[in-house]
Length: 225
Image 1: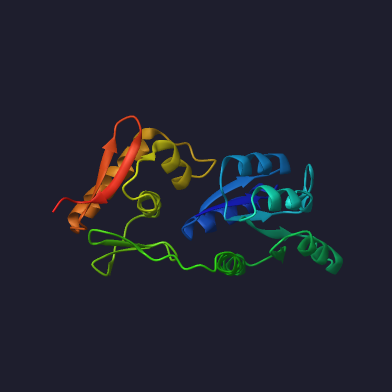
Image 2: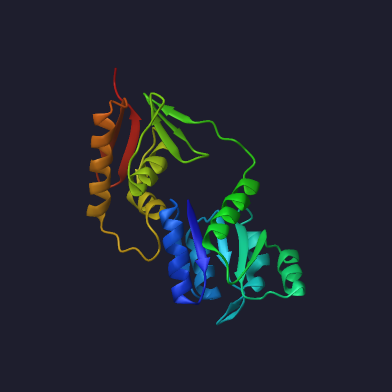
């Protein structure tokens, strides 16, 4: 899951991004409203962590635009603006939550989980392919009921493929769902991730295969009987 952090204090943005990454999210960090607008144009974000006092304006100023152009994106204001009227103003403008600085990162993560639960009330059934099943709600994979444990990057790769099982998934789509804006990604890195994931699936006899579609991307499907 991809989260956009709009924060102009580099040290704080780095701390937030690092904890989100350790918690299994892909975290993109930008420092201005202009950069946030461009990132939102390029990617779908389930959640935006938005500072108010940014170099080019108040974060609240883009809430209405987000509500129109990205209605499914949830927004949490994370700001030093602590006055009651500022909180009310931010929530009335369309924010889903409001967290004041300084804050405990564990509280931030708990609030993120709560906002995302409220955002998606629907329960998506697990995707089953061969002996592999993937819980899209909890972002967990299982083989014959036992946890399929892989690295965070490989799990993101598997989820991207499983969501489109039986269909081609382009290199561009996979990279956008596996890596952050600030990651320098070479196609060879994606190939290595696919190779490792293939081997892990083979080792646990998951009953699925990842096919290479030369010049396009990859496809996952059930292994032939």
